Image 1 (spheres, one colour):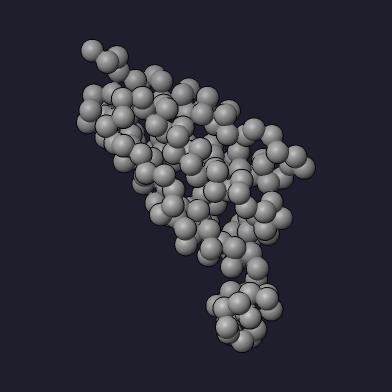
Image 2 (cartoon, rainbow, N blue to C red; image 1 turned 90 degrees about the horizontal axis):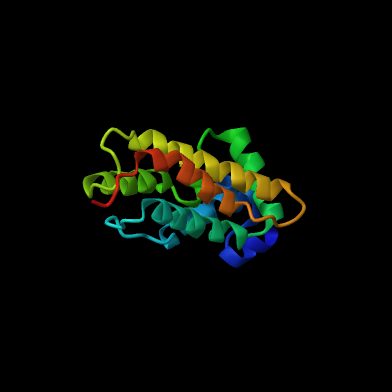
Length: 163
């Protein structure tokens, strides 16, 4: 915390007025770069591939970080907030997912009766679970590919043939 305060050119105590812990700083920094998440085309015909690409884009940012910092950030997030962990990375992640699903509906790639908000929430939960698994593990398993497979299971019943 002293190094961070020095780099920010503020007093050590002042830093604690805004960020009571290293974890809160980490969460703030994660949210700061949300616009770096890859934005995908809304008229993409490969709905599952597009959703998986968005998930992979966000996951790359997580895996570039330090696992110990993530552990602290997760504990802090759980202790003090009900915001889904993914939203610290990209506050608009659920809305992005829902927007992609709505666009796929409008382009005729998904059935109109698919609940886009609920489906986005399910995908967000799948990714959160995978990231928690990565943080909790002592090694680097490929936790994202199973998420892509699960996205396909969630979305496939609603896919319309490209006719």
